Image (cartoon, rainbow, N blue to C red; front, side):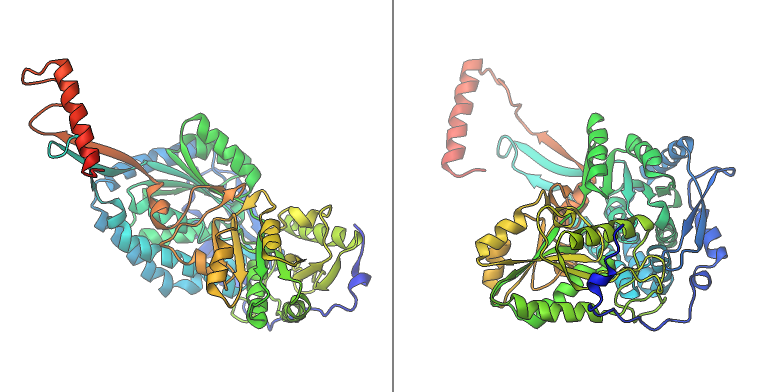
Length: 539
């Protein structure tokens, strides 16, 4: 690969954050790993797989691999547990979520260590996962009864037909969760499934299985029946299809390519699926934006979790009249970010998670620079900090033929583009097959909402990066286009795990000729009745 370090010799290097004095080995001891590994559904003689700590490159954990029979056993146990669980009142199930909420906040340091050890992210960004999972637990713990209650609907014949819409659990949810947000995207999506009366068979990414196993252990401590949440471990192409094959509904978060395969496999069985997939998210800085606030927000938007966040920003559109001033502020803040892997607060960006992610980031940056792009900040790996560190990078002069222009990087790299009109900015932001998240910065909130309405993304944040929309857990979150199907959060986030059932009770008279009416008179009577119902506004 071409060495372009010389091209960036004048770019300031990000400072290193002070170390914490704690090591991954001391924070995640062998005894903890062995205890959590017992939560994997696998036989006593299972083959084993090893994971690596991104911060150091050292071996982290040894876990058992689940076989085809293990996945079948997981579904068998889950189905038996689900039948008992579904009979409990919603308030009983919701109480488990509220107890989990309290335990999670009380013992958050345990899982923060695990998240950092498995992903390499900064502690503040690991804390975002605790926030998100706790908010989901609180919301569904408080609102599940309202979401799931029977609802009276208009009957076929007013006064004679009593109709109820009821919600029944799907059964067993097959869940495939990724490595980048291992707490929130495992337990956060499982909580509404549980409170709706379902069981879950979850295949977390092997790299971050310890975090999911810890969450399961805590949820069991909060009162969840142990068999209700089964966790299987193995290679995605091997174990993933088995999870989909056994599910009554599939929840998947991951790449668009794999999401298409999951959707096709679920569709072949006429099983529903929700898919939260990739994104090439855009941030728009309008001419009237507060440039300091926008620059600060853009740093959060682009570099949280080292850019390994489905809703992070990879394309930045700035009005030409303020572009130079904004970019000076943004580049300075980016270059000042403290990098580090200490298991404590203080670092502002952590590591990438794998060699594969480092290779993609490096390739996108170096190919762009070779083709004429300019590095305004970052642009270099930082192996002295750890094997997978890469500086937060801002690229200017990116053109369509460069891979970084349209492909999802999923790393700490953002490309800058200038625009003259808001219509031009909206068109450019929408010129992608993805449609997950976007961000608009302006002092005029009405104007911001007007621009937001034109953006083809599942969430839009005005004067915030991503947390405002994602944290609004009563509202749906998901993607359009190649960014997925379905929604998490809000009513859709729990009702996706249910089947709607209409129970209609007919009283006194049947819907058909009776009491001596001929077919013709019955038809005439109902024709008159339908006209009358329309005339009086009956719905």
